[in-house]
Amino acid sequence: MGRKKIIILPNHTAYLPGVSAAVTFSTQALISNPDGEPIPLPFLKENGYRGVVPWGKKNNLPAEIIQQSEKSPIVSAGLPFNISMTYGEGLVYGHYKIEKNRKVFVEMHDNKEINEFLENNDICNFLLEQTNDANWFGNMFPEIILNRKNKIVVILHKEAMFSRLEEMNPKTGIIENHFYSADWSDPKADNVKVTPMLSPYNTVADLQERMGIIPGKDGIKKIPRDYNFIIPLNIPTPGRSYYQKPSWYSIFASGWFDYSLKIPEFKNALMDNQMTIKYHVELSDDYFTKIFTAEGINDEEKQQSRIKKEYEDLNNFLTKTKNTGKSVISFIRYNSDGKEMRRMKITVIKNELQGGEYLEDSEEASNILSYAMNVHPSLIGASPGKNKTISGSEARELFIIKQAQMRPIRDRLLRPFYIIKRFNGWPDDIHFAIPNLVLTTLDKGTGSEKVIS
Image 1 (cartoon, helix red, strand yellow):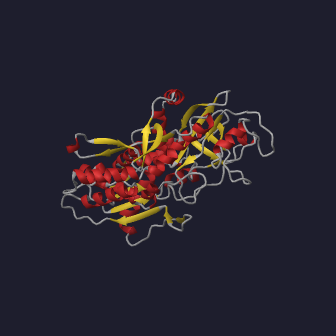
Image 2: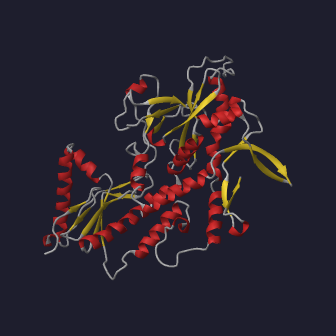
Image 3: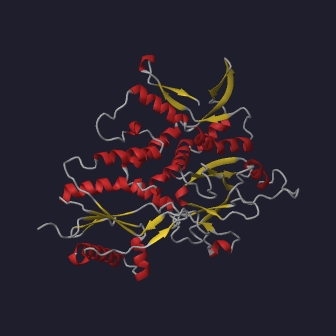
């Protein structure tokens, strides 16, 4: 007799032996919802602040994106690659000059004030942190701190994962405050830090006005009351007022991310348990959460028992001969784009096992995930199968093209330094850059050269 015990994995996916079915969860609804209604927190309202705009349906989208992405070797390789390409050779400063009718960037190292600022603030780590959030979430939250002499002396990275935005001022359309907490599941007055945000349109003038350097619209100079400010910074995507939606999130909405994870699950089932999978049962990501809520189950041990019971019921329903020809009822809701969001979907799997199962499927999924992340598969070794290698010259050209595409993101990452330069009164001809590492042929005596794009 074959194995009859229902196998439930730590991530709650399962195998139902009675009907040879694999059960997984869908991530398609993860990013389908627009920004939700602001959450009115009493302790914030008492101090004159507007509601917190939730990031995702559960106000936990950054953590969910990270949790899901860690399951995929392709995403786990593609994101660090994009981050390293964005970071380039790190931050440098200098000036431009004209040589042979060309604009050439010349690095500098002798400005004492700039050197001290960069060294005191561990700019390498700051830039890497900002680059991480730019590629993961499209939102960055650099914080500047001023001294009593009206000089910006500190720049800090505030994690996007723990950041939330205040509902914008309906009169000005400006987001005025940034909220920071390590626990958005239970926000309280003692674990939410509020920092004012500068205007994204006239940032330097706004800061000068807040610090009493120039008069406001009423002609009166203010007395400074804040010395910490968030510079609004993002990689803009269409129609997003608060939190951006990087293009690579399409791997979730399209279903390709889920598909790529099913392949190793199915292969493991075949290899480890000698299973033949006839059905794939796909549940929505909140399938059990809704059951727990409806039945008032809060205890973790009881939740695990309820999950097991649900799988046993499903296994029995699909197994018993008396159910042959009958239907299983599942509920459907629609997202804002009119797409179906099923709570349960059952698919028949055709099995023709001859060895090397799902190899082509794996290659196709790897390629599509890489395309969505704008990473050529050959640069990170994402394509399985034979004859997928490219020549050194092709790899070098792909590498150069990839770094050239980083320019818009790098320009956004450099914006805080131009704001600091203007406010602190650093020389006008000082400019900041992130150099490319451009690969060359070895017959020139070196494998690389530094180039400012």
